[in-house]
Length: 224
Image 1 (spheres, helix red, strand yellow):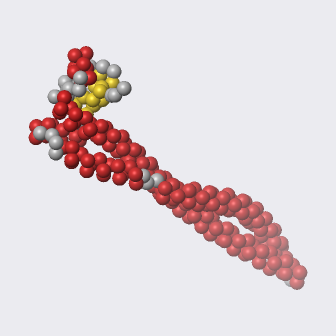
Image 2 (tube, rainbow, N blue to C red):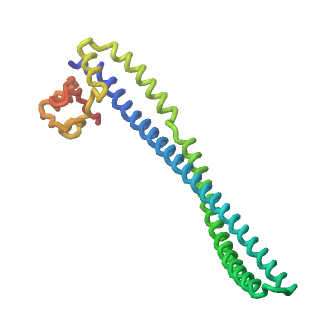
Image 3 (cartoon, rainbow, N blue to C red):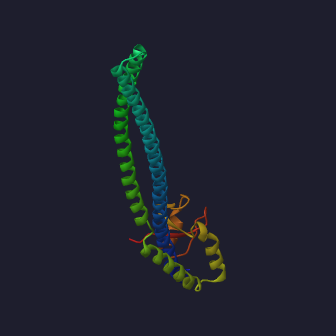
């Protein structure tokens, strides 16, 4: 078994290192997915802010048109009063009503300008946030060194598997999707947490190839 362990030991080290690399890769992919989701949310926020500003701008234009109509009615009522003639009372009523309307419209217009400033500020903030999110998406990628190391490990694994007998190779390939090896942590299997007996631990320390009696993965004792 000593010779067999010496063949499998590099494979165990390779697999455990590749698992670490794959976790790094998966974290990078998750970070990129989250960055893309954030970018899309900010794009929607920007679209809503733009639409809100457009709706508000149209409301302000309508208010200005109302203000212009009130002003024209005031001017007409004043001309009627200046020139005299009949209908003075109606002209005065028209003047009073439109002066009140003019005052109301001007108040609303000023309030609308304040609201426009607020919406413009929201729009600018949304644009800045989107620019930052776009930059984050561009930089959130899996490091090429990690991808290269995973590819190299795959190639090296094929070479190592060529040194195993069919029986051990098939056992390895059966377990590989969920991990063929498990580190011994204290006195337990690092995968399924099953207890490792002192006898089994001694055999492992002698360099013998042993499997966990629960999950059947090959056990690896940490060096040092």
